[in-house]
Image (cartoon, rainbow, N blue to C red; front, side, top):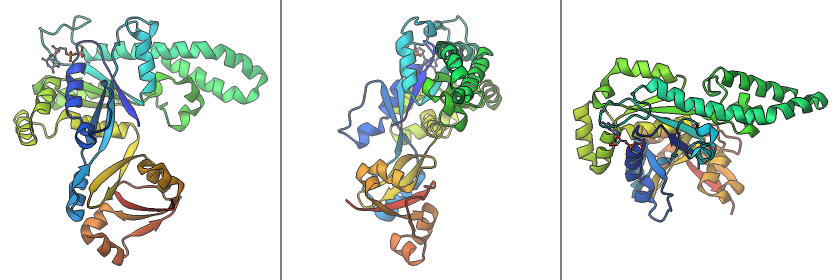
Length: 361
Ligand code: GDP
């Protein structure tokens, strides 16, 4: 499955946040036999539609979609040169599908900042500089050979041009992501085999003091630092406290702070979207469940997420939109009113599709 790597300078609250993430482990709750790596936190993506489906189908269980967060230790200045845990750090980032930077904005004299002062802007620059330098090294390793080859093999001209353009962006101190060159998009294809770090989607978590959670001017300022990446604001200590409470107590605590949902819930939702994922829904007496697919996935690909045999033997999908199903109140009623569609192998899944697959085994 796709993973989001969590990175950040030392002492910004990564461990505090990560511990809160793993306490909320939906896998542990819903799949007791699953093995979970110690550095992975699996967070449920809240979806109010599941409760509604569970009501219609009298489901025993609700299984939300999940996002995997991986704790990547070891970013310090010089990581791109192999300082500290530099090499391991870069390898771990390379394996992640998106990069989540935790940025310290909270003020606390008892918690030392590695660079002596709290400055989100400087910290973001420190981390991005290491990632940019790592990408520049990758490019410098391959570009001379590509340029030589292109004199003979004319067809690699566009690739050389793409790599040179990427180098220019990086040399200006920008990430490729911020320049719109993003993994999975058309303009990254020619660079794909270089596995550049800064083509991964970025998102930023600002670990802020409680009063800043509701300070809109402050948030606008920080958002501007990281756009076009998404910014999430949370207080890691509060998240840790929330993870210890039952749902009702947690809601009370949140209300007292003035926020609507736990920061990690927001993080899971935004992370899911940043990864380019969407869900479709299945429902029955056993469970109502959200399944994770790539945006744009076809019906057979969606079936394959449940079981590879479902994809191989795919015949068709019976699809009812969530809104129609709720309006009709049951599958039988939806069928009789013509709201259940039979879709074939070219059908592109839509958000909120409630699906039953037909397949050969
Ligand atoms: P890491 O090095 O990035 O993993 O940071 P830690 O999670 O270990 O946190 C470093 C120190 O900062 C610890 O003493 C935490 O208790 C403290 N800390 C973490 N988050 C917050 C926060 O939101 N506010 C305050 N005041 N302290 C925090």
